[in-house]
Image (cartoon, rainbow, N blue to C red; front, side, top):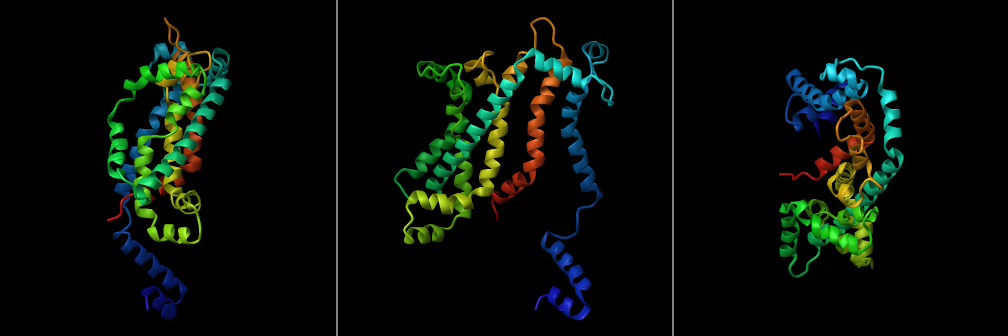
Length: 301
């Protein structure tokens, strides 16, 4: 009989709850974190959040004020809405926002789907050349993406996709990191017994993937979707080359706020705040899922 059950019988439910808390602390490695740990965590949080708050301070100022005081006070000024209206009138913000949403959602969905398919094949299927092919996929992560810009641009021009959103979506439909991540996760999280049971029940390999592997990969897939969404949302180099100012995504549209001879930092920072706000909201909504996905994908000793 466990100590919790014994305490419940002898001393009542209050003592049982106390015994359960003590047991949980012992299983988690001992005592609870002290004030030093929380102070360090708060300091790291403040350091991480200050650049965003600094951008917010600049966005609420004016260009003459920033020229006089490049480092503004910690109290926001009252020009944020004015600068936001200037952003809306200076660049095609809403069309750029819609383009970014289409690109980020499409790339995230296809990356998760194809990476999970490839990860399932590398983790649980047996075929000739599996190890070498996986090593080749991982090795492509060492190649700088800038080396493939010229041939990729030529291909997109020949396919008549220059200036169109598919030219940004198609190259990002799968990633080497996504394949590696899902392979590592499914190797540990998906036992062969479940696959064999599904095959005995008459499931095809695709149905086995859809009904067995995909639900098991949900935590890691959620983490991969979040990171892919953020990467696609903030991507600038390739959309700037293939789309240009006629049909921009949000980072490309923000670049249009800079003039050749004068940079209005209040205007630029207002655009940065507008572009960052959806990502901050996404972290607030899906932060718990992100942490659980990272912990679920960690290697357990």
